[in-house]
Image 1 (spheres, rainbow, N blue to C red):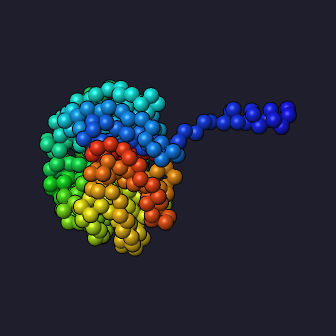
Image 2: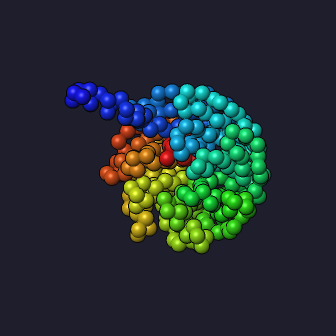
Image 3: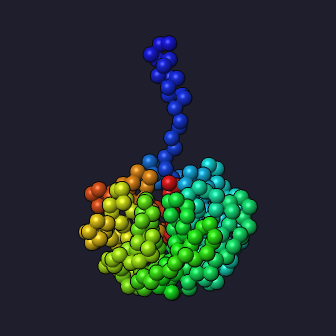
Length: 313
């Protein structure tokens, strides 16, 4: 075989790697923007009625689940075709949404009924509604798929749900009005953004006990981890900034200005770049986790919230 033929054979047999895409819900536009992160621009816009807010992309990136509070449930998007596949009715207050690490179940927090609905992917029937605290918002699942953690905004607490029995294992008090939360890659720590107390509660996920409270800035809404869990990034909605917390010292080490009213925040699969949805600007800011600088601003749509995990893992 010639060198040219060998090169061609290797090239053709190698898997084609697509650029990671970010899926940004635009609540006021009733749409989802699809960002090609290699091109740093929106390459598609998908109509999603019902004031889309929460986002959960399946771990393999194949589907995007979008909560629609005014649509009483969530939308299922096919990320290969950028088409709306299904509309699933769940309840009147659907907001926070998460998909299991194995992609087999979707969980939806209901703001009004103070519960979390559990659904099997593809069947779309509610298996169970689990009563939690008041006005549940953020949801996060442990990497081993054993536990679901729920931020109960008006109860100032986080609930831990056993995903085998679908019952509450424990509840811990946190700061005032918790909203977004993140779990580390080992499933050991939960970081909870407390909107009204302007801080983050760090919780031991196994013991369900607070480790530390870290002061950030005004109205922290959501969180994400980057750089091998060494840095926590927190959106501060009221002053248009992102706090950076060193997870070893548990101290704020930087404050980065972004757009107006940032909320949703997720980390690119490269574990370095952090994407921030700016609600009032209709933009996404891209932060380099190493330099802590904003390296790009991408125009999306009106009311960009993207609350949840808007990248596949």
